[in-house]
Length: 431
Length: 160
Image: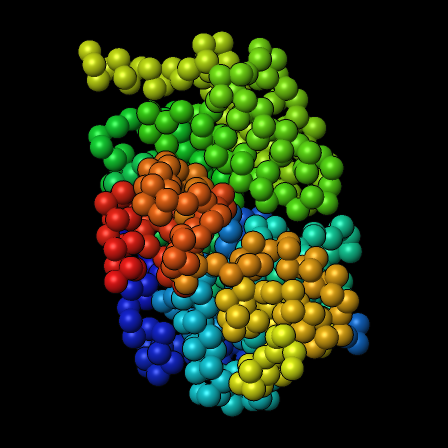
């Protein structure tokens, strides 16, 4: 089956980040087309496309734009979320590294549709090389008349600035990002008011993920209905899946929404490494509830199918675990991350993430007690929906799913002070 | 003379950064990045200097500086290594990479080799390079598909 490459076709092409090359391939024509349309028409195309927020929340992009009030007398802003910090996610790095002009073109389209004249790209601090590529492309775009005064020869003005983060997962949360951009620590804000109304510098603000924005040129060029037809119901187009873990070919794969998870892992990813068996899959970044092998082999990869399977498509970070993986240790790795990254603002998250981390550490040190399983489930229950942002839920969801789906492994660790997975394979090797 | 101040070139760069934002304080993160580029870390003198540039109380600068993990508050080695310990890297052997670095460098995570050449730390946050797991970052660059032997070679090349 041919793979649809809407936004990944230039990955690996050294020429693609050159403005002249990009233009020669028809680049910036979609932005020019959009600039000749009424802004409302552009938004209508995006709504018809069923494009959804690919940072992870899956909110319909066109609707998000419509929430921005027009007559506040204040400027409006676009913040492009390039913080990409959800564990298991690495797709936006490819767009910025290989196809930065596609992102810039998408930014022009979004800003014209919403009436924005200043955009900030918030890129995580670790991405130094992607930042350099993007910075050079933005400079080229200014020099070539695609940004600044009179964008592409029209009367539209647009400035784009890149803002580097400095190492904080929480700044990928949209209001944490706004605080960080304003020069503060990234403590998320209470909603409402939503950023569309009161966002950056107190002004109406659209916050969209890099991949979401990168889809816009194709949508304008070929139409919203065409894009919707590529995906599945209510999930338009393709998305970039980040495949990693125990597979033969980890990497970024662009596939239509609704592609079976089995196809991603076994056809595109080349199947399990070392001829081992599939044990579990984390389908949408480490915050997504884990799927057992049986569940994973039945599910399709789109926002609605994965939600129906009590997990989530999230950021598209698909992590594959083989049968030799100890689920207690795996959860401990994940939980330690959330404990480290909780910003400390809300008590259930600050205390809950640390508590989970310490209990798992205790179990792995052979000092677990019988009630630990129940305590872990109880803590995660009390962390759900009790804090300002979703980090608390993001830590609770894996805890609840790992513990409930692989409970016997946790109980074995507690009771026998050893790992039954390791024992099983040690026996298999010596026998 | 002040204990820390921007070079003429960096001061010019700062003025350019400042113009990107309608609010002065928003320039704080990029200005701290600039200070760290110049000095290798953000010293207390640099904190005070940045606070003055942006009309902020020093305590506000400290609060922000200490919130973000990429700012060094003391001088790291000439090469600084960050080893990813997130789930995808862990699944593919990050623990072995950690052990090899610890034994090769002879100092614990968070410390600098006695000659000041290399400092290193393990980081629990994913660096967005799971396709080349296990991986590490050394200064600006990512190095992936690591094995303990690859770590040896990387360190050897670094010392040359």
